Length: 296
Image 1 (cartoon, rainbow, N blue to C red):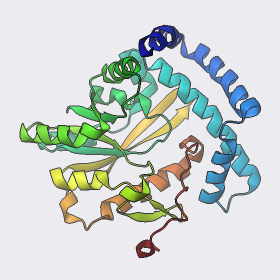
Image 2 (image 1 turned 120 degrees about the vertical axis):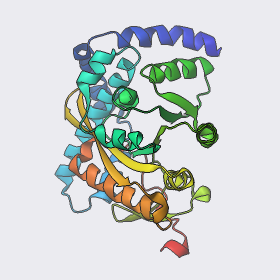
Image 3 (image 1 turned 90 degrees about the vertical axis):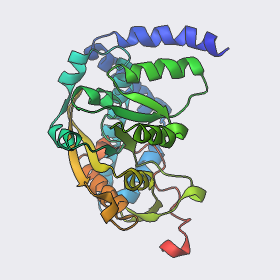
Image 4 (image 1 turned 30 degrees about the vertical axis):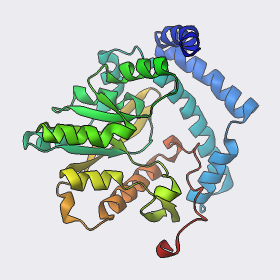
């Protein structure tokens, strides 16, 4: 059954990906109208998130941010489809890197890198990272139930040189490469909400206490990784600019959770510059009423 579903749907996705971006954005506009005005997909979730994050903003501004967010979300969906067949030339024209020399500087010094980031603007096209970095790039992916789709998506994401690990195998993979004395840059999107029972640390995110992932900090200390944030800004429709921001080159000099605090503060600052392009469709503050006494 998995293969039948894949065989029916994947050729359609592939053909769709071959369309010019201008046509894909017409399709995006159609889906925006359908999702926003007819279905109303997660409109209340997004608005609730925005009210909690920006209580000082007037209602009209929050509604405007929500509308821009959904327009962008549909664009991102089409851009993710385009990723299946986009050429190296086109992705590097549309997705530029401001200062890859920051990462390459530490690569030349023999260091490995933790590339931390958030679900901001377009993270799917960051699969082009190996084209500007002088180091092997590794990223984690979530295993899909359909093994045929998983293979197709993994191949798509790896075509520019990133090597993928299943999330559950990331640490083991890193350990193996360090044992083999191989450098690497490890992409770690760190703004997801962890399961409460697996949470070690709570802190404020837009003035609300939430559980936060500390995996990037723990891995950077374990393997002595240079910690560099990468943030993507939307320049105009279909065009993005990514900047690398050094957090620390000496993670072991920091007390527990200080690196996580620096990353979270930097993420907030970057979101504030373009709030409409952050992934607000997830319940970002769903655990705010479960803060342990130790963190209140």
